[in-house]
Amino acid sequence: MKKSILKLCFIATALQCVSMSAMAASRIQMREAAAEDRLTVSEAKERIEWAYRCGQYGLGDFAEEAEDEYLDALFTRSHQERARPRYPVFTNNHFTQVWIAPTDRNASCTIPSGFSFTIKAISG
Figure (cartoon, rainbow, N blue to C red):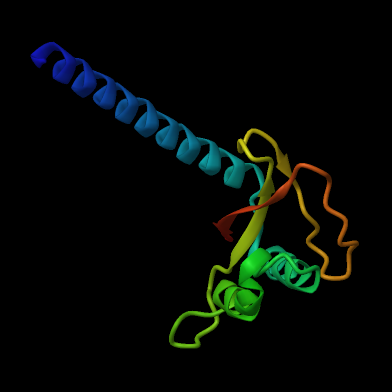
């Protein structure tokens, strides 16, 4: 019985380590993806306006939160305009590829298959 408990503890510890390693790798990949799509403040504002117009905020079950997400990208909780807006970055599910979304609010809303809004980056 002691051997089976030890085996279970070892397996649980190994799984936890693998899970933590995957999370750390995802964070690194997310940082690299955001760095690949660096925007100035004015480009970020245009990207935010484009994403809002194209329905990229509040997707799925959270449609009612779209305006809140949009406003949070541009303004602080005290309603001051952000000096460095938080703009959307589009990647594939594994954060290994970045699609450079438009920085013109009037650009086409077509997003390549396999890409979605996955990261909020800070401009500047």
